[in-house]
Image (cartoon, rainbow, N blue to C red; front, side):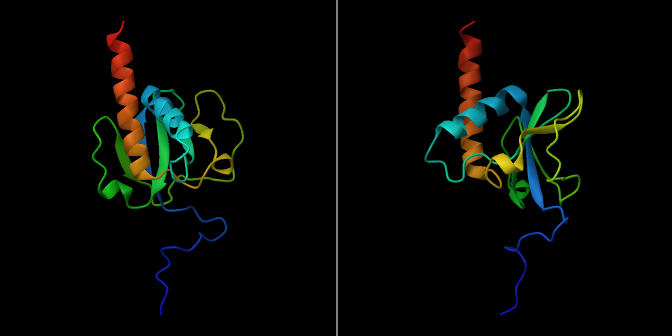
Length: 133
């Protein structure tokens, strides 16, 4: 049987092919907390990026997620490994994009269905909190 290479680890130095779900920071932080609190969530939360301006968080998800991602208020982009550097976990400089949760500290990626549910719950919590003001 010939291997398709879909389940093989990337070669050393090669960037993994992952997709990136970006969301507003407030919703993303809530989602991180929701996933971490839910002990039954398979795999938990994976690596999370924050942008330098503090406006968005990016969740690394399996390649192919972007093909079917349709959650309002978020975007999912195919990275094809572009711009992904996993060995560099140094603290980002002011204004730079960096890791909120580096790959070494968490699971490999966030399960898209777990993320979708957490983002939905986060949106409802934020809406309820904003309506109480």
